[in-house]
Image: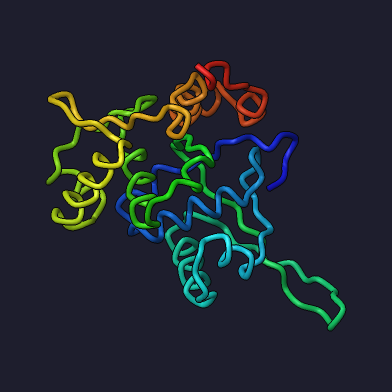
Length: 214
């Protein structure tokens, strides 16, 4: 990871919800972790990303990356590089951060499946703006995420059993604010996307998370 500071959180666009399945959503999160914390640009090699993700099939990662590109979730630019064994193209990935949420790198180290991590990422994307509360019913959430109702039920139970969420009559609540971040920056992100002429990317880059350790 690069940047002025290696911030512990990354921006994840809400636009992945309904477009990516659980494993793809987790890859998008991994790519975000391998990106600059301010520009969300990554020069990670596909081989390194494959290892970081935790599988051996580099071709699968490549297919998913091209799917992200086709869905306008990332932009892929190729730059010619002269190496020891000749010239080759190095890919650079720019992640879409439209209407983003903030998720820390803490999730990466959690002892749970990639599928459950991907589900938690998608669940955060469907929370109310600047909150960790999702007010969709299970059937509504299944439609929003384009995932079967049985899968939503299964992963909600897993998330609840592992202590990541709680459910009550007000909705589904992500419990860990240090993992699924709710800060003034979350609100700023919403304002920036609704009123882009008021708040610039430079303004966002200068913001610090004041209540991260609360």
